[in-house]
Each structure stands twice: as structure tokens, then as C-alpha cells.
Length: 140
Picture: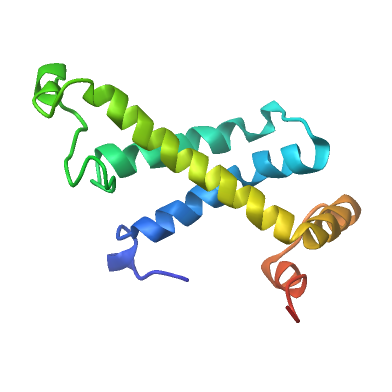
């Protein structure tokens, strides 16, 4: 859905989680189809990790840690929130990434026929536009 200029910086937790799933879809597809992984998803993994980290440390979207902004704080300031808070932040970021990767795998498995069809199409024509892509899912 297109957002107006005033809404473009407003992103819900659900939208961010969906973005994580999309970003990890390439890696999940490699593993599913090739039973191997490559360096091809490096940038997507980097972006997904940054988003997950910001969800936890900047936007307070961790149920476990609550609505606290940890970004830009000195180490002593972060320690005010408890011992091993860095570990807890890392656990929450990893949890978001793991859930997104698992959801990407489930979606790809559920739609494996379409994944294969799209891959075959891309081998023939190199690009698929939005309308062409939507046609793969018509009639579901």
C-alpha cells in the first residue's frame, strides 16, 4: 500500500515483521531449492538485522524489554536497565530474525509451485513486473 508523505515514516510492527520476512525470503529460497546457501543474500541479511535491531533498541517493539530506547546510550546508561542487557537485546533481535526466516520458509513451502514457476519465468525473461507477478497468484 502506498503511503502519503506524512505517513511514510510511520511503520507498524506488523509491517516491519513482514519486511523482515521478505528480506529473508531469498536466503530461505536458496536453502529450500538448492539445500545450500550463498553470499547472494548478504545485503538483505544486513538490512534485516538493522531493522530488527532498531525494532528492539530504537522503537521499543520488544515485548520482553518494553518501550525503551537503547540507541545512542553510553554503556553505563544501558546497564541501568539491568545486568546483561546487551545479551537480552541480542536475544530479542535474534528472535525476530529467526521468526522471520521461519515464516519465509513456511510461505515458500506453501507456495513452492509458484516459486518454481516464477523462477522458470525469470530464467526466460530476466524481469517480472508487479502485474505479471500477481498473475501467478490469481485463482487461489
